[in-house]
Length: 223
Image 1: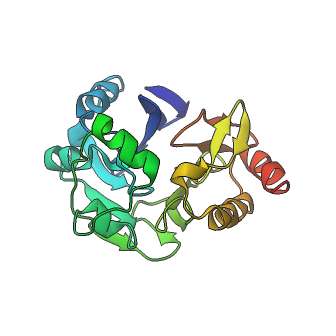
Image 2: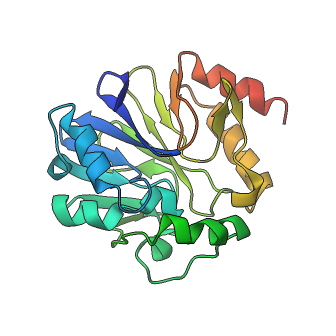
């Protein structure tokens, strides 16, 4: 568990991150990591005196298995409300099969099957999440229903999901093999670059703490 700013932590789950936000209404978890890692999440929460049962809301960025893998297990223990975009929701709840890219098909046997769960709130556009101070932003391209989230506190903390990554300290596009619509993803990156935020965290890659929006703008200006 790595502290990003006061009340926001990053949980490393292999090559992917989940994020925890401590709010007046309980813990918010942004994504849940790969399948079978509830022990990893619970152990990380215990470092700050919390547990899975303290999670009240789960904000999902998108349906990829490395981001929803432990969802069902967490919901079963916590009763948390699950929020995702309406386009990705049928895959998250298991009512629609996913369209896996070749690399996803290759890695699926090693990753395992995700623990799926119903989506309680399905967003169709930018808007409130039901958590005061956190806004959802539709940022498609990596998946059609990809969402990013902006926390108002600390001059803005952006949870970018997989719309972008940090490679050697520089903002970058997500990998092409898992991003079926890169042109739309680039448009989503430009959208985020218009916002004001001091910190950005990613599903993959090290957090950028300080002047993060400028670094987004610097990169998108070169696309």
